[in-house]
Image (cartoon, rainbow over all chains, first blue to last red; front, side, top):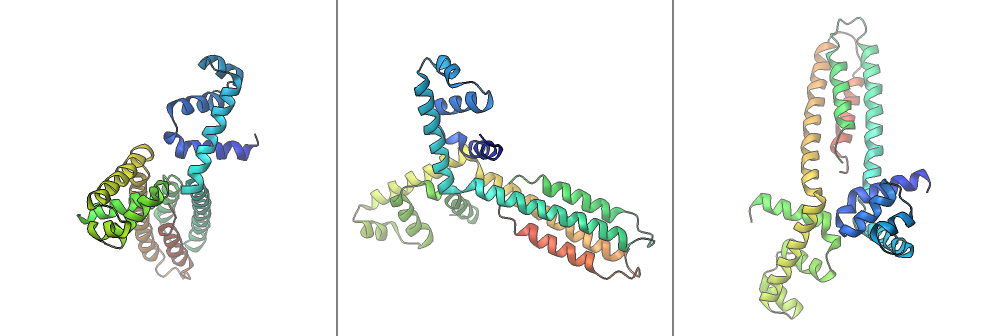
Length: 126
Length: 126
């Protein structure tokens, strides 16, 4: 899988994984997180390699169906981008503040505040 | 229903409504959005008042089940609160900037920037 696909798979699973059956979750975790092969998972569960393949495919489709209805991954990506833009604007403002208050005897609390705010924004749970 | 209950119902429906059946969605919308009575909805669908009551109850339970698994409403509420706190911190910083740069010949762009950033944060799609 390409890097972007892996990220997307991982986000889909983060958002909707809890809606899968226990078995689907187990198979997906062994395959995506533990990087076991289809053959290894098949052995683990005592089913055929094809059975594992089908289970993965079905789970994947279920995740995509949830995304097509709820669109959380798309929204998450857009919001992440928006937060990154805001973070850059705060950086610019910090630089601007430094330039404008040069020699004005300021004590740096404004800059400190802005750095704190930027950190909080970047850590928003979205 | 109390105001907080209405808000919660509305958020649950916003987040998970698309996962309900078409019939469940229709019943919920008539009841919650159009404020029709059980009797009116029963007439609309040609089912019993008890049937409407059961459908609403089942739809409500489905929404709560999704929330217990995905927790989006809880996360949304926490993030909204965090954004409000950040917004207040920006307000404080705007005031602080004004005080510190008084007489320093600044042109107000820092303050303008901060107001713009605050607006963007408040409009984040979370």
